[in-house]
Image 1 (tube, rainbow, N blue to C red):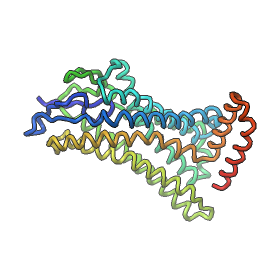
Image 2 (cartoon, rainbow, N blue to C red; image 1 turned 180 degrees about the vertical axis):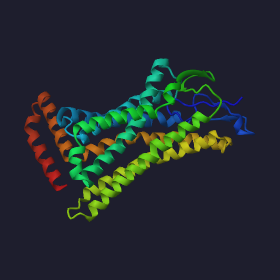
Image 3 (cartoon, rainbow, N blue to C red; image 1 turned 120 degrees about the vertical axis):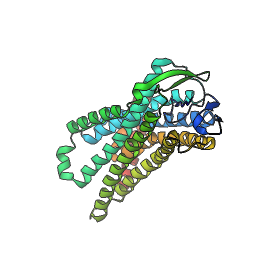
Image 4 (cartoon, rainbow, N blue to C red; image 1 turned 90 degrees about the vertical axis):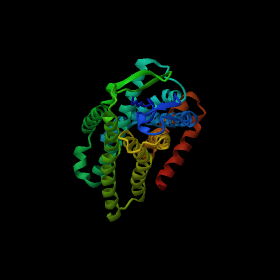
Length: 347
C-alpha cells in the first residue's frame, strides 16, 4: 500500500515523530529511516522567530493604534501586515513543541493552529505585495495616489487581501485533522486519499501564490521606483537602498523554501524515488521553512522602523510610558528626543 503523510508544522514535510516510514515509490528501499534532525534545531529557530517577531510586530501594532491612527492606505496596510505576521507567529510555539514530540493539544487546537498558520502565511505575503504596490503609487503616480491611497481604499484593499488569504488556504483548511499513525498522534493535512494530486496541487499553488506572482509584482514595482529615483533630480539614496532591501529580503527568505517545495512536488509524482533524495528534500524543507519564517522579523524593520515618523512616535510612546512609571525618565526624555531628531536629520 502506498502511504504518504504530511507534517503539521510544515504542510510540506513528513512527520519526524516516527523513524520507519514506508513508501513503495522508493523502489528497492522499502523502509526509509528518517533521522529526527528537526528536533534538534527547529524548536530553537521557531522560538527565536517567535520572540523577535512578536516584539517587532507588537511594537508596530502599538505605535499604529496609539499614535498613527490609520490616516491613509499605508497605515492600514502596515497594521494588517503586522496582524498577519502575528497570526503566523502565534502558531510557532505550538509547532516548536510539535517538532520534537507528538501533538498533545487536541483536535480543536490542531484546526485553529494550522488554520492560523495557513491564513497568516498567505495573507502576510499578499500584504507585503500590497505594500510594494502602495509605495509604487506613492512615488511613480503621486498625483493619482492622492485619491487612491486613502484610508477608505486601504480598508477595502485590506479586506480583499484577507479574503484572498483565506481562499488561498484551501483545500488545506478543509482537511486539517488529528490522526494516529505509527504509534504517534499527528496534527496534519489528511486528504483521505492515496492519490497525490491534491498534495502536488497544494505545493504548486504555494509556488505560484506564495512566490512567483508576488515576486513579479514586487520586482516590477520596485524596479520602476528605482528607475524614477535614478533619473530624479531629487534622488534619494535611502529610498533606493530600502526598495532593494525589500526585494533582496523577500527573495532570500522565500525562494529557497519554494524551491525545496517544488522538489517535494516532484517526489510526489515519483520523479525522485530514492530514499536519500527524500531525506535531502525533507531536511532542506525544514531548514528553509525556518528561514522563511524569519521574514516576519524583517517586516517591521523594512516597512516601519526605517520611517522617521514611526521612530518618532515609538520614542514618544516609550518616553510617555516610562515617565508615568518612572519619573526619572522625565529628565532624560528631552535629551533622547533631541538625539533622535539629530539622527533623523542626518539621515
